[in-house]
Length: 511
Image (cartoon, rainbow, N blue to C red; front, side):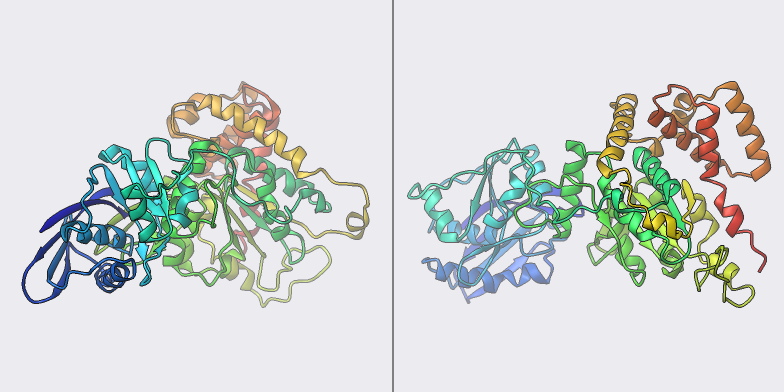
């Protein structure tokens, strides 16, 4: 007997239909799974056999061959268990209902329970395009299905429950479409009102949030660099529905979507330890999973103590920061993940941390500060739109009891500036000033004549690169947006230039 059941496969973020074919012949009892299965798929034989028996059905001890088509694509993971079980039950004539247009996704336990799997959301989004109108998924993945319109999704807890639904004995309620925020709120959101002093650094982060710009914070220990960076999420602009769906799909594929969360609505904030490997940052595995830079898509990647990261790790950021995506090639194939992010980095000016401090002397041997700073390469430094010095805090600033400006007030200005950019870049795929193309930079970064003269002088005096020139224009555009100005004035350009001058103070030290 022969039977075919539909399922779905995923490779990176690319999904495709999978036909699960089962053929049962008389002969010596065997159970073969073919179609480029990995170890997890091959081990489905034991899980499926036990689940069939423990769900009240008979397992056919004959020659069973299961083919996962197309055989040219590598099949990874345990998500095909449920489809294999259904194909065998149909091929052994234990199920006789039509399953055209239905797909089955889920891992099986030996008892017949249906366990959650990774990547359900992108598979559901693409299901309708492949002619599938009904999908059965694990109950624990049901939250992901709430944001999918065009497919009827049934969450199942056990094989027996699913069969009872198909026979009409006990219908299962389908997942109801809803875009309501189910992401749990953090217990306590850090607020910029907690930060004493550091008005220049807070302004720099406001500009960074408004335009999606990368930012480098440099200063002595205890000056508040990490404190400022960890409060950045509280002023980031609200995510659009498209951004939320993109980010949620990445977390679904990575298996990091919190239980019960239908949609990620807060911008991610990823802060990997400096011991992370290049593969951990970029993504890795036989079939590469998203790394930290993809998990930070549409959000922030915070790299504290930047010079302590391995050189190969930091240099892996260069191409993704420019392109907004990362392509990983392995023997199993090539995978691309989006990584449109803000890079926020913090560092000390030297190993002891006090080079240039107004009251504490640097205790590093001669030449050590220059060697320490050289761990951050020029090309990576050039990709940082904003360089800001976070100075030491004095007693009067710390003891000041007057309330500082709250994150809520800052976020209002950030959202207003982002709304201007949404209107400017509508239907272009660009979301913020930092991602402008060269043509867009020429079109939208219009300087007044005095500002043009000033930029000419600055370019010659500071010896800026072509990339730095473009970044100053984009920064100026963001500052003008915050100011509600259609053109870039001298004051907007002057503020942008000061954010690009810090590397001249530190990175031109004599060795």
